[in-house]
Image (tube, rainbow, N blue to C red; front, side, top):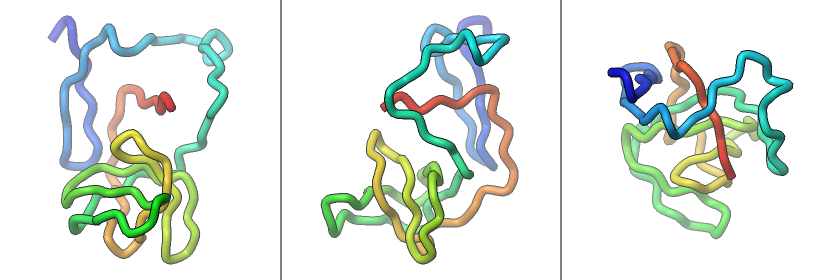
Amino acid sequence: SQNFYYAEIGEHGDWFPCNSVTLYSNLNDATIFENQYTVNGFRVGLYNNEIEEHDDIPFAKDDILIELEDLGEWIRGYSNGKIGLYPKNYTETLTCLNVIGFFIFY
C-alpha cells in the first residue's frame, strides 16, 4: 500500500502508517533521544503474564516483546509502552526477523 509500511517479526506481521515514521539514509541525521536502548532481540509470549511487581511487564500469549538485556531467568525489555522485567521461561526467542524499521520512543 502507498500510505503504509508492512513489518514482520517471525510469523507475525502488520501494517503501520508511513506518516508514523521518518526514514533516514544516514543515522547521523536522525534525532537523538534522551532514552536510547540497544535492542538485543525479539521474543514472543508463550503464556499470559500478569504483573506481580511494579517493574514487571504484563503481556499476553503471542505478544511480541523486545529484549534489551538477558538477566538469566529474567529479561529486561519493552512491551505495551513499558520498560521492565519479564520471565524468560514465559517467552521464546524469535529467530526469523524481517523488519523494515523499528524504533522505541519512550
